[in-house]
Length: 157
Image 1 (cartoon, helix red, strand yellow):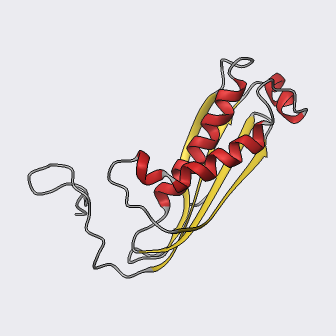
Image 2 (tube, rainbow, N blue to C red):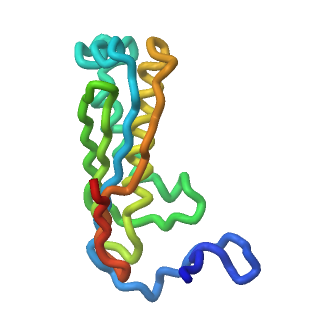
């Protein structure tokens, strides 16, 4: 049975010692969706949201969040990120965000990718909330990870 690595024998939270781990190429991708009304999607497409250009703001927020994940999530190690890429795709029912992170590190980039996707979606929410109180962020999930001892994970569609 797998054990929780961030819990000590007494059940207290602890930071994992990554010192002995090898530095390897780490990549991760995470996605989420923000559901929006058709009217809001039209406003985003037309760049008619009062707070400004929604998709660029979301991309920048996602990049910034990925870089600062270790400051937001208590037991996450800072990693030397090489690249963060945030893509947005307008769907019929909302906007899909995909955040990819890569690094040469002793620990993975999954949390950075998840945080980047989530904060990009939250930024969209903040920018459209005045016109769409029903907006909701859904399906935040890891899509892919590679590197390290546990190898590669790829979510099936």
